[in-house]
Length: 102
Image 1 (spheres, rainbow, N blue to C red):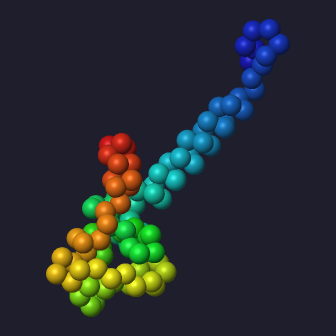
Image 2: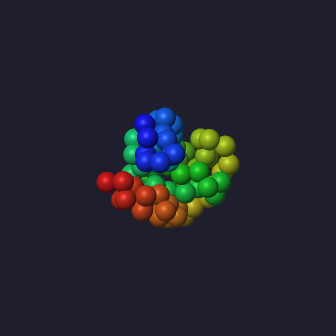
Image 3: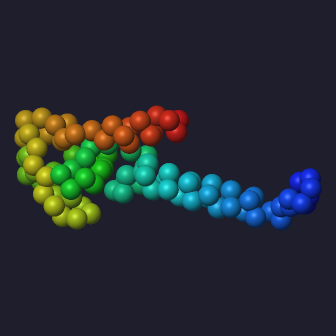
C-alpha cells in the first residue's frame, strides 16, 4: 500500500498495534483481577509484602485475629485485631485504575 511518494506500508504497523492491544488486555486482566478469586478487585487491600487482594478474600484467610499470611509469598502481615483487614492500606492506585476502566 502506498502512502504517497516513497513511503509504503505492508501492514506491519497494524500487526504491531494488534499485538500491543492484546498485550494491554492481558496486562490489564492481570492487574485488575484478584489472584485468589479471579474476579475484578473489590476493595483491594495491600499486605506488608505489597501483594494485593480483595478485602473479602483476605477476610477468609485470617486464622488468627490481627494476622494474615500472604498466599503468594507466605509473609505474615499484622493489623489491628479490632478493625480487622479494614485497617490494612487500600490500594488506591488500583482503585483508580479500575475506575478508569469502567
